[in-house]
Length: 345
Image (cartoon, rainbow, N blue to C red; front, top):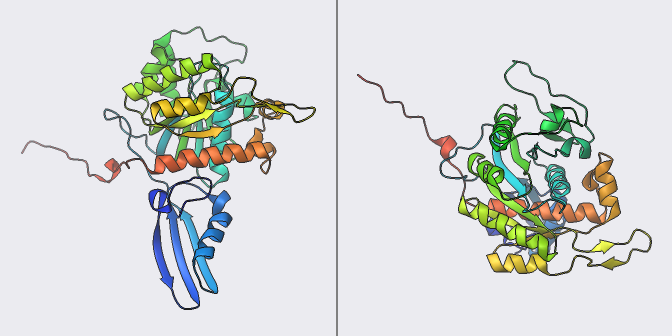
């Protein structure tokens, strides 16, 4: 049986904890490896249709575990999985995609954080409606993350004047990001979504080597010029052994605000071809619509502004596919191992 909207078998992304089936009734407990509140009803209908009894009691729960990171790095305390949202170039809607994926995971029941790693152009404070706020500290050494729409947030944008240019070289940017990542008191997060800076230069390479990533999602548009850089970004992450969870084709089609006409103004099929060329999955195709931009600018991205709308549903399905693919990756068991201390006798 394929999980609805995920197109993966239940055995690959979850398991049956208990199944007691009698002549007239059945009790079943399922455990999924990703948050899925939004598809519980659909999943229940599929299971009930396959069990020929009058009464079915079904319990569905999600258990999100830590997954492996780069071999030379250790997972972050109180953060189960760090997922980078990256692009080979700017202007493809990476930050809008990142914030809506984070909000979609939270809406499906996960504990989520967002780290705005775009030091030169932080946009998450504006898109989450908390620009101008400042983080607090209870010990003078670490920062409490800000919260918006049910997610924890940290960004350099909270610490500087919005009109102040970040005239920093690569090592300073890397140092600043490491401080934001490690000196924030994240509160038991299932997924920390990192909005990476665009490009494939020294900064991006250094960050991909120093941040313990469980996976990365590459955002592109169907346009050939964007795909050229997206392919380079994907190869960069592969070279540092970060799993590619999938490709998101943003601005797949343009939807006219006046008449609703849909047109692929940036071309079509680019994301599908890239996914096929690199043997990864195309996990989402998102439209170019003025409402997505307006909602992000207003501090209420699509998943919050219109939770039942088509754009929010597209983001939620993309987020579920991403989380399901992560659930199929190798798990991290290092937290279960005792620390070995060698002492001289």
